[in-house]
Length: 227
Picture 1: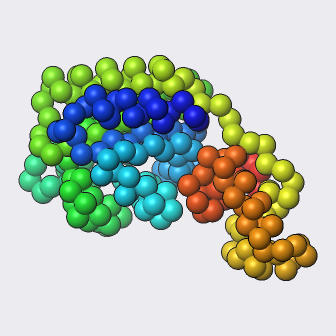
Picture 2: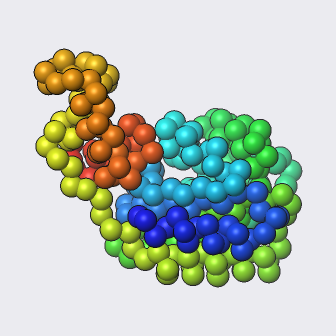
Picture 3: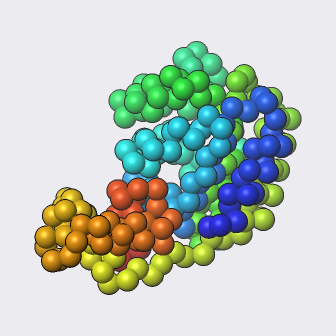
């Protein structure tokens, strides 16, 4: 999704110094066969201080435990939120849940404990959010302006094209990765060099728009390239 990056850059620049970070994420289908379980986003663009959360949100799947994403999937209205105890927030009732503990700890340690999020429910069940991390509480006017920016951003990006397809060898290497094999072990199974296997895995990740091998496996499984 090449168009997303420059557009997210423009929004981040327009938000000004009161915003510490910005994240845009998109998935053509937000839930797995279990309607209570998020899949990882196919596209995620992070700016500012929010860049540090991508590895954990995708690589360690903390995205699935983030109550902000859970709320956004259920409602249409933009909303402000806080992980700070005692502050009014749409997610205040979720903070005591055990699975939220690590998410909250990470965000507070990074100084990203407050923000505003715009849910973007798209055609054919696609789902995106735009989230700004802020230093202080936001008022209704600021939230409304941010919502206009989010909808404008999505209009400019449009619906992302599908990634792929993977070559048979790329899919095969990803399939072995899903079984827990290392690149060296896959090379032994396929009678290929380890460097060639790494190239196949890297090419598959690029085609899928994945951040790492685990993300590539998740996307390839959901899209049907591997079983």
